[in-house]
Image 1 (cartoon, helix red, strand yellow):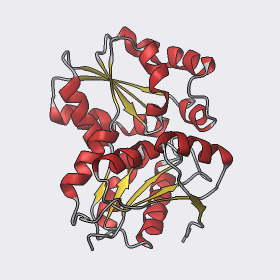
Image 2 (cartoon, rainbow, N blue to C red):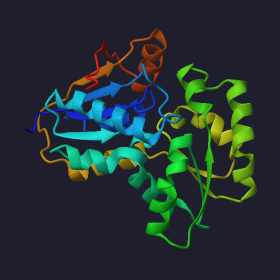
Image 3 (tube, helix red, strand yellow):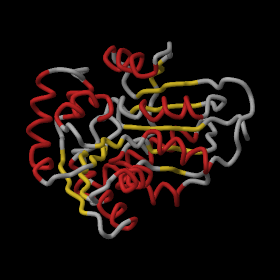
Length: 262
């Protein structure tokens, strides 16, 4: 049905950047977000566990009769997207392909850096997606496992976060990249830090590209007035509430729900 919600899930607070982009591009749509805050981060988990969590999250959203699901988690997109597409009857959109397209479009030299969780980098999903779009591109990747816990802690402009970024990104900058893909939906929350560390490098945040892909693939658009936003979490914390309010720039209610782990 046109007024059925679009479901979005992520391991934690980062996917709210995608929720916000959808809210801005498709204001009439009803949106329901699930952050798996009890099990964040996903980036250190095994391939098998990431798939299991992703299936459980999508089944949770299915309970709300969603018309589409956005996997606003790079780790889940890299490891579980094709399985989710096969398993569920509605369209499922990931974040890797839109981000790769944006990077290829943005890069002039074809030297593209990708930062992400250990699991995302290990999957080679971004490298494969970028090279499939332009085989002349060179892709340099770096896992940044400390970024997610720092962001979840709320240390978005902290000097410790900047020092960690300098250490992680030093070797990518030596490769003379001109474009850097923020291969985790948490990372746009420290875009200020990353911009300072990577002066002159184009930062690709896939949230806007994902929103445009959702608009293109929507099975039925809601033609009503301003849609509703509902945010669900597996563990409701003060930290999540604080960062969610900052990202969304509007009052949002956050509900704690149980995941069906069968």
